Amino acid sequence: MDNTGLVQGWADNPGGLGPLYPFAGWEVAITIVCVAAWLLWTIWQARFENATYRRQAQELQRAGSLTRAVLKEDGQKQDAT
Image 1 (cartoon, rainbow, N blue to C red):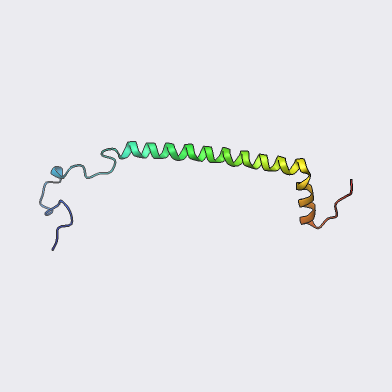
Image 2: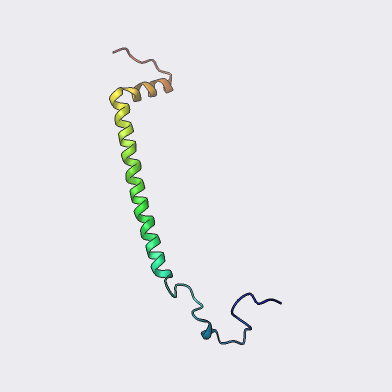
């Protein structure tokens, strides 16, 4: 049977293998960095999408396209003004 790791048998001293629990080294720092990066990206993405939405809505309102599109979808006739 081939060896698949550092443990030769269960009679060995686990303390000699190093930490056997999670977050023993750089894992905590890396986790904090990843969570911070995710939060920053989420905030940036929300702001970007909101700005894009506002810009597109203003363009539609300015040209009157939004009213025409809504009336066309509803099947209503647009008043000639």
